[in-house]
Length: 353
Length: 81
Image 1: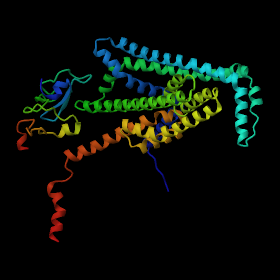
Image 2 (image 1 turned 135 degrees about the vertical axis):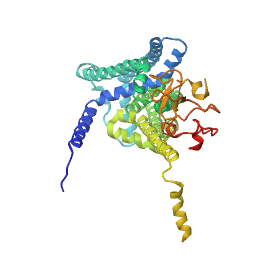
Image 3 (image 1 turned 90 degrees about the vertical axis):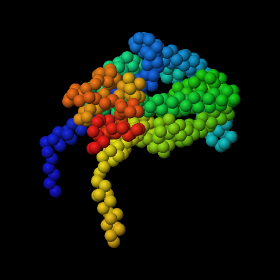
Image 4 (image 1 turned 135 degrees about the horizontal axis):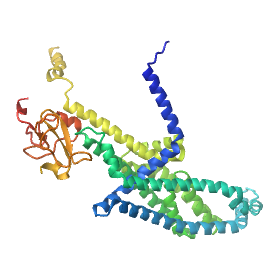
C-alpha cells in the first residue's frame, strides 16, 4: 500500500499537531480564559442594566466586581472563622475523640490504636515548616488564578462593546442576525449553567443546614454557606462539604459525626446522580443522560477543570448541532432538491405497473 | 420607521439583485439606507404591505421573494417569476 500526501496535507497535519501540543501546554491558561468568559457572560446583564441607567461602563464594571468581592469577603469571613474554630477544637480534642472511636470500633470487634497516633501528631510540623510551604505554594497558585480570572473578567466586561465590533466586522452584510443568535445562544448556555449551579448550591446549603441544625452541630449556618460555595468545585468541593461538618459534628459526639457523614454522603450521591442531571438538563436544555455522561467524560479527560467545563461544553455542542440542523432544514425548505416532475416520477412509474 | 426590524433598531434587507445588507449592528449604518451600495437599486427592509421584517436567516433572506406573512412580493415584477 502506497500512501501519498500532498504538501498541503502535510502542512495541515503539522499545524494540527502544533495546535494540540500548544493546547495541552496552555491548558491552565485556557481554563482561566474560558472561566473568565463564563463569568463575563454571567455578569454582563448586570453591567448592561447599569449602563442602560446612565452609569458609565467602567463605573458599572467596578460596582458589579466590588459587589462580588464584598459577597466573597463576607462568605470567607463567616466560613473562615468557623473553620479556624473547628480546626482548634479538632486539634485539642483529637486524643479523646480517637479514644471514643476506638471504644466504638471495639464494640464491633475492630481493634485499632488511634489514641496513641493522635497523641503523636506533630501539629507544629503540620501547620509550619515544609508542609506549610508546600500548602502555601498551592494556595498562592490558586489565589493567583482566582485574581487573574477576576481581573480578566473585569477587562472583558469593560471591553464587551469593542469585542462585539471586532466580531461583527468579520460577518458579511445580511448575516449579522446569525451571529446575534449565536451570541444569544451562548449567553443562554452560560445563564442556564449559572442557574443550575445556583439551584444545586441552594439545595445543598439548605440540606446541610437542616441536617447540622437538627443534629445540633455548631456553626450550622457557616457550614451550610460553605457547602453551597464549594459545590461549584467538582470532587474537592464534595470532600470539603462532607469532611468539615463531619469534623465539627465529631466534636459533639461520634454518633452525631456518623449520622452527619452518612447523610451528607447520601446527599452527594443524590446530587451527582439525580439532582445535577435533572437540574442542568432543564436549565441547559440537555437530556439528563447527556449531562451525566458529559461530566464523566470531562472528568476522565481533563480532571477537575474537565468536570467544571463539561456541561457548558455539552450545551455549546447542542447549540452547534441545533444550528447545523436548522441550516439543513432551511436549505431543504427554500431550495427544492428536484423539480415537481422529478418528484412525481416514481409514483407515475408505480401507477403504470 | 417600518416593521418589527425598524422597531428593534436593527434589521436586514436586500435589493432586487439579491445584494443583502443590514443596519443597527456594530460597524453597520445605524439607520436603514435607501439604495444598494453595489448596484444602486432600492433596498427593501420590510414588507411594503404588512411591514413584517425580512427573514433574518441568511439562506432564507437570499431566497425570499414574497412576504411569508401576507404573500406580497418584495419587488415589482416578482409575481411573474
